[in-house]
Amino acid sequence: MSAFDPVTIGIVSISDRASQGVYEDKGLPALRDWLGRALKNPITFVERLIPDERERISATLIELADQAGCSLILTTGGTGPAPRDVTPEATLAVADKEMPGFGEQMRQISLRFVPTAILSRQVAVIRGSSLIINLPGQPKSIAETLEGLRDGDGKPVVHGIFAAVPYCIDLIGGPYLETDDAVCAAFRPKSAVRPPRAP
Image 1: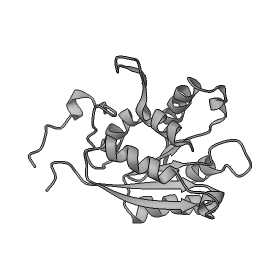
Image 2: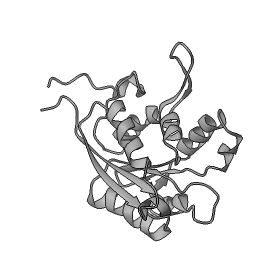
Image 3: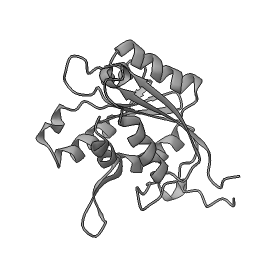
Image 4: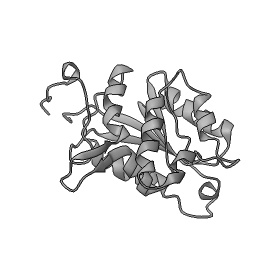
């Protein structure tokens, strides 16, 4: 038995062409890899590769939150200004609460690299006891926004969004997520830190 709570995480790659097999999807492997390195918890992934269709995206998020029991759902793709980019609208359509700080921080991180980061429209919401976050489409940008930026000594320059995810999931009744500090140190108030559990 693990010393850490098991967690079910939904990962959704949203792309017309990848879902049609025109090119290989890189979003799902990038999410699996980063989460596998960042979390100490045993993870069950529920994966979906779907086209840029608003109703399909909303239905997938509802399924993962309500039926599959995913405490965390991460999407990648479909957050720009192009006509087919409808992930934020589909996400907001299923929300109980919006969590605007996640999108604001992702854009702050990405602006360190490209001025076009202001065109990104990622949102984050809570549905029931699930936290749903839209991430950028590129694997490098996924890691940067989750992990944040560090200086040459490894000290955080800009905090990544994942530092706030475990405490958010605590507050909505999910499992206690524990991170590998070398990848991303979770932040909790001292009163919310749980002592290590014997395996």
